Length: 294
Length: 321
Image (cartoon, rainbow over the protein chains, first blue to last red):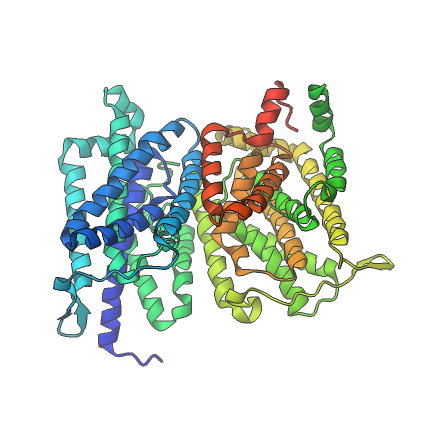
């Protein structure tokens, strides 16, 4: 039926893996923030956009991609800290809808702000020279930069996992998403933990942005559809489950990439079809626990 | 005196609505704006039934608005339907069916998931509308919707002038407002508000809350679909943005600006939003930035919205006008 060469298909699977990694970075941030604070950050996509722009301009200033790769996410993380401290924090104790509404307004402001400051036309962001070549994988040639994205995301995920399971702060974060009342009763200041988690989540979105920049271009609206697709990833994986976010992120990445290959028009639609199927069969998501955090 | 006025409005909200909107086109700079306020007010009214009264935040109401618009538009432009009434009914039917299916799926999850799911399904419809260009016109929007004369019994009325169209929309929105009042005053409406206040308790009282929420969702979709169908007739075009998330965001902002959970909030919000947008476009291209900041300020400092705050100040008994 399809006249496809295996090499082209394999390359597409790899592309899906790269896209999936970007989804994973975004979804883990969303999921962490939600799991601990029951805040859905609608502006998460705008943090992603901000990461890409910061990366682009840092690269212009310093001429060094590696410096930008570290500094841009830190800048976005700091921005996230300020947003949590001065805006989101005011809404704790109100319904969970209010932070969603607030960050929705924030995303409008950020996207329009980016258009005003950096223009309406997208920017092209070249990958660093060291990674500009293609690597021969035996069955196909693949851009080195994309392999690098896979590697760096995997490394960040391992580091995050170690942080959450091996450190005291990580322990408090996990405990706080289970039973915040009990954690408070033990005399732990959850406000600081919330701040840290919001910062980490924002920094991960910023990292996703700068990594995606050289592959997908940099423009003000780049985060808008990404945040909706990341929501889908979180729903499919199960809210608050990090393993779920990783598996679902890779799954959605492959679904998008492979449908683009076979039926390009359906690629955006398939994401939501997968979500509807998961909801029908397993409403709490692949790795979610039913009734948790609702 | 002011309290008395609010008391009268609270006692007869439908009459108050009819009186204000009967003269409304003569109070705003131009008629098109008045019609827009009516239509978006109706859209926000539908959203408010779900959010303000049932406590379910939908971030995907563009779906039902768009289904109503495309339903009526496709009936007139592609299927050659000659009656505006039939076209409206088709738009309504499509919006209601969409509300039933999507509502069923989204109500499988509670709380904040619900908002995200409604948003995701609305995006699904957007992409379908985008790619099904033979029917929807795709990116260019659905063009060439004829505005046939309206048949009322043995008479036919032309809606070509903006004032005629305003009063046609006015008549339909009046029916919708009366319908909403009827819903809210019924035992069903009381259960909706019980669900908003404490859904576990409503469930413990023996109500099948999932079914009631679904019914509220479908009613809400029907109101939104009516608004969409009217807008399709007004513009003679259905832009693809009708289904886009920005449209969902607009109705959320309008309702919250006006005051969620109040009877007139949606119309106050729609009027505020549209008049501000109209005025702001003179000074700046960056309307989303302006409204985004205003909206954030409202969420932070005025969560009751304009009308809700007025009611709170003037009528301490908080009569839900």
